[in-house]
Length: 276
Image (cartoon, rainbow, N blue to C red; front, top):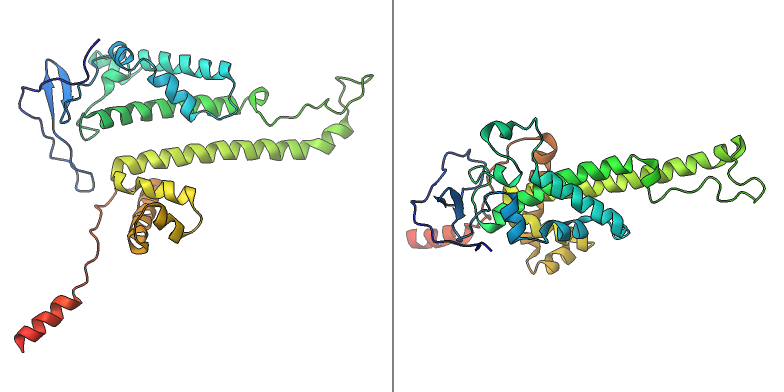
């Protein structure tokens, strides 16, 4: 089994020509054709190597991100579909022209600010989330797969079992339609939150805990206590989240994070005293 770390002997490669709104790229090296992060992590060369070093990663990922009510057979189907997706690039993929055959080979440290284990696994998580979101939404469009569906014959007597008249359909159609719309909206909201969280993690991972605090608490004071910070500290994080939210919605470049405001009153008073 391959080791996750290796001694990096080559000179470090630094990509410093990113726009000012991007975070600074971390150093990585290329040793024997493999990317090595500044923490010593060796990026797997292909999916087979990734699966050998992390044999249960995708299965555990599906269990973590699927709904609690998901059936075991659904979890297994999603796991197998994601394994196939990660192992084989589509025949029309632009990466095929570069000789790449699977998703792991498409990882580019210069585009993901480094090659350490956190950067690499974040890329894997993004790929899995995008594919899983597509599969889940396609499943939600299938009426037979919606957990909130009700049987049209649920209240029929034995003699008329399986028969549905116009009166019954008109009586229940609005309720069934609203129930289906609510379920679909809940699924879309969950995936939207996941997309935004991934966006925040890429652009400014320091404010990701603020999202967790907002979801777990009800007031700003509770959120500040949840993060063990001051109200002003949490306000700065919340304002940064709002800024990232506008960039996320409008697909705008993310500006650099401003440093905390420092009061200069005391300094000015001391300067006046010395001048007098």
